[in-house]
Image (cartoon, rainbow, N blue to C red):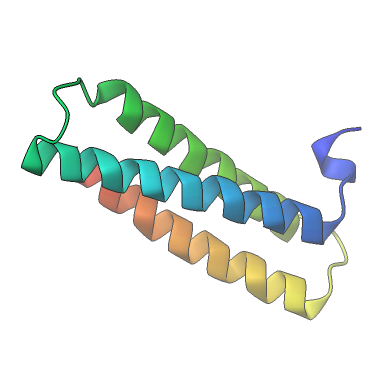
Length: 95
């Protein structure tokens, strides 16, 4: 089954899970860079974090681009796009 055939609720739920995972990984990377908890390169962790946030953002935009969506789903997707866009910009600029 294609992702475009999924219901809006499932897509928004996956978008949230990918987004929050990406934000947590990015935060861990920043904390490790500042406090040197683990002596490991943070480049791959940053890459995975940004990739997860991009996937989450694209899922939220996919919901917005559907033809007839209910108003609550549209509002959730719009809020998700704003939050994920801001977090993606923050983590890109913090690298």
